[in-house]
Length: 130
Image (cartoon, rainbow, N blue to C red; front, side, top):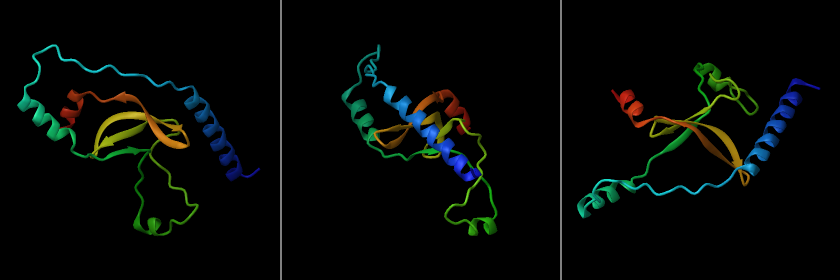
């Protein structure tokens, strides 16, 4: 068996394990957040509604690699680019380029998704902006 066949076998096994795990996943109903303070005013609600509809870009990053333009131009179908992460390491979840969480890939109904495993606190995100 060639190394390529061995890699494909490992990939198939990992996908089968992921399919089993996602079949066991449960949907959880989240409670609404309630503030103990005074209710928001009409003006505050209007301001909040204005920002809630602003679109943002969310992306999941598996890893990164730095290569020369020469190597970039030599890439073709079947090429492999080594990333800076090891297999099984968490993915980064970025919103508009800012790290907000870490997660793992899941497959639900034949589509890829991400299960958040660690959400960066607001305080830590603000510290990174400075």
